[in-house]
Image 1: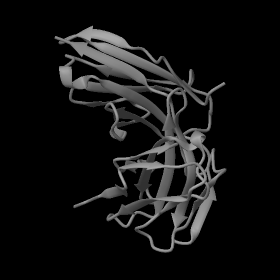
Image 2: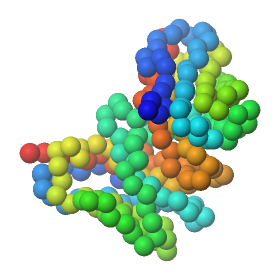
Image 3: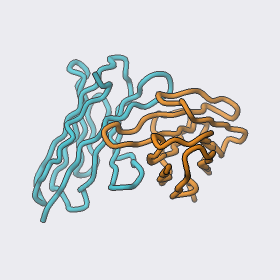
Image 4: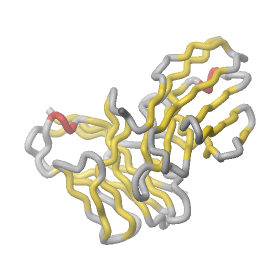
Length: 112
Length: 109
């Protein structure tokens, strides 16, 4: 049971490049989330999705785009990466009956 | 004011000690409460949910005080493997969770 996976695990990119972080879950959870984690800020919600084709902004959505064409996938795209987007990105999911979220292993992104 | 506030620590305790963390939350409408554990450079993992009547899971006890808007986590007989950051979490707005910045625990031999 793979649960929730993220790829790549590590990524270095240059300012201005587009980069996509992938998230895949095998639980058929309806809800999926993207967070970034930075020192001093804790986990901050970027975007979330309640179901396929339903997405909504979180606390820090600027500079990010998401899509959810299939229940199991929730990619996060940085359209034009900036140094301030250097962070650790976590994807999470949960089913509709509980607030408990389960996290993927994270992607460590560095923008140079 | 942050929605969830925690003492960042670190709390340095010897093996076998009992240690307690508190956190406060500002949203009186919050209904769900959790403690997550996060090891260095790893993903947060659910440690336990926190119920109104308090709940226990082995060496871990969680309490909720709605009147004062705080939750607590008590760890008894600390192990070296308990060293981690403990995140206090409540449900925020619609369908979302709000995370505290965490309390770091270091258990030494």
